[in-house]
Image (cartoon, rainbow, N blue to C red; front, side):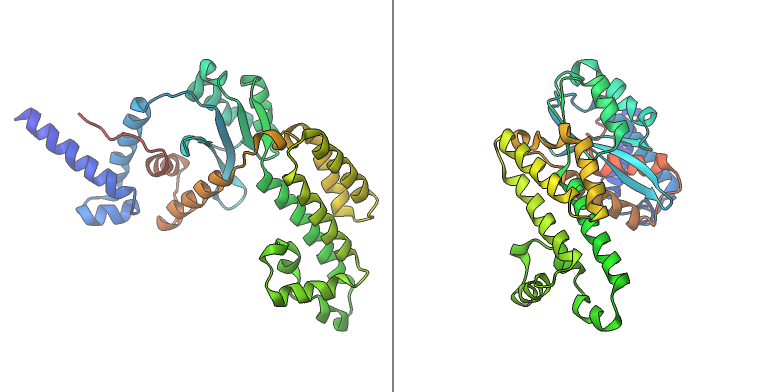
Length: 312
């Protein structure tokens, strides 16, 4: 009887684990009339089995990003295989010490040597780890994060101008935030007309808008020299614009050119990682958050890493 009973137990555990990928642990517990702690135990055991038995294939292109665990700048680090579009690793915090086990344990020295491209935001600990453990890999700073900083510079100029306007002048600028940040091809007819009226004014926000659009041309270049020339010319113009947020942005770009210019050859972004981050947020929301990082990490692996279920 021992062997048939063991098979039934594994089948039941797997059924609970499969449902826990779609529902919260509490919701899964209600469906099977279990305590949520029993579901948590099943999920953690399933994840442990899956991590031990999943295939350790060569990895060539990865994305590293952070995701908020709770309020107060408390983060997890997620690593994603951008070629196979699957989660590789999750770690508590985003410090060098916290992320180092990915390279030394999860990936290992041999597979570190197969890495070709590592896409990330401009967080120094991530870059330091790649240079130390995967020196052959090209660091590529993510387009999404660079554009985010660029848009923040535009918005900072807009806010500063807003503070200086009179009540009558604010009527012209009201509701222009998303108008200025949107890509031109996404504007409606009415929005294009409003933008056309706005750019006729000789205001700092207009200079900011033109600088933003001129920078975006960089992403279309395929020849490294032309891309670098364009960026150098743009940085000179931005520094002479007398717009402090753009001068700060230029200094940031200058300090990270070695990870920005390779875009012309690699064309890799962390867009898939951002999609994974949204899925991770939904896992947290449906469970109304997790009290411990251990439980949250187990839930992320279980839902996002395509881990095999126990067979015996």
